[in-house]
Figure 1 (tube, rainbow, N blue to C red):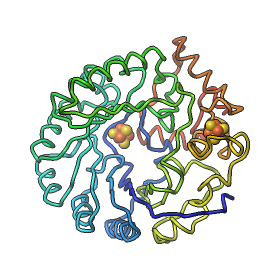
Figure 2: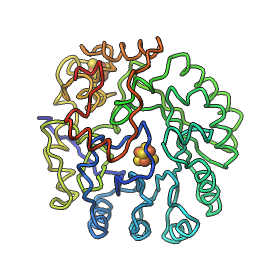
Figure 3: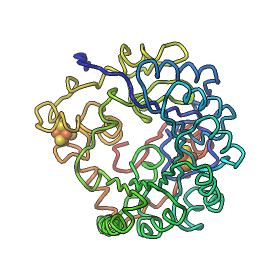
Length: 385
Ligand code: SF4
Ligand code: SF4
């Protein structure tokens, strides 16, 4: 399936998800809900091999992510090797574990840039959403990042519970000296999908937030760049997932599985290659899983004859699987999808303020094991599950 593979270039962006361990418990966490089943982490040698092979193929950017990558004691070793190989290196962290001593060691190892996540601008909401007392710590870590002279990207995932604080979030980022602020609306996968009825904002919230961001964008243009990533549920326009399946991004999970995006392992019938036994080149160019959704040859109607198919490549395969129970279908955020009603219904419920009866599920190993035990990791009403 997908067979006609034309002009497959190398992966340019390597995302090394070093661990699923994380001290935080974010209700919108992008790690898979069954992460507890995949906790056998690659060792240092395994990661060094991945870094070398991906760089030899042509990868130029390397993000160290997780979970919380600071929990890996060999992070400095991996960063040093990535730097030596010529990658532009980026650390994506919650801040926990980024002490001054480790910041100095990472700087010496050649780390180029740090992305620090906050959950909100107030201690109460930051700590509620992450289910930890980490707000003060994140403020200290922001100062440590600046002291090391790193450019700082601050990242705040937006949703119904913090959307109205967007002005305060921008002011906080400015006060802490962030050069970039990414305000990414929640994508409803994984833990965020489980919590969608709590997290999906109203259209009015979104419009107000976007207007505030536009105002600050002009005011702060000389010192901070603001990125506002709009949510696809409200826009009704599918997004080209990871710039095209297997076209640019390579994610490697903590156990060494190669994926075209960090949630693709949920898709049924695809066997993603393990880099314990495959080379990066074999995984990227030759594996059935990476070739399966490359290009447009795999599409069926309505995508197959759609004028936008090269532009959005049918949207997200994981979203199609989660919301239409068919990974080959059009992404249901598309108005042409026969399952678009699921998305409209979710937005209608958000507009009507119909909040879920069940409480928020916070991401942690116990909740993950419970999902595994029940075998119904995607149990949302309206998902057809
Ligand atoms: S989203 Fe939160 S819980 Fe998930 S890995 Fe990041 S900091 Fe940890
Ligand atoms: S029908 Fe398919 S290709 Fe066309 S806009 Fe919708 S998702 Fe994109």
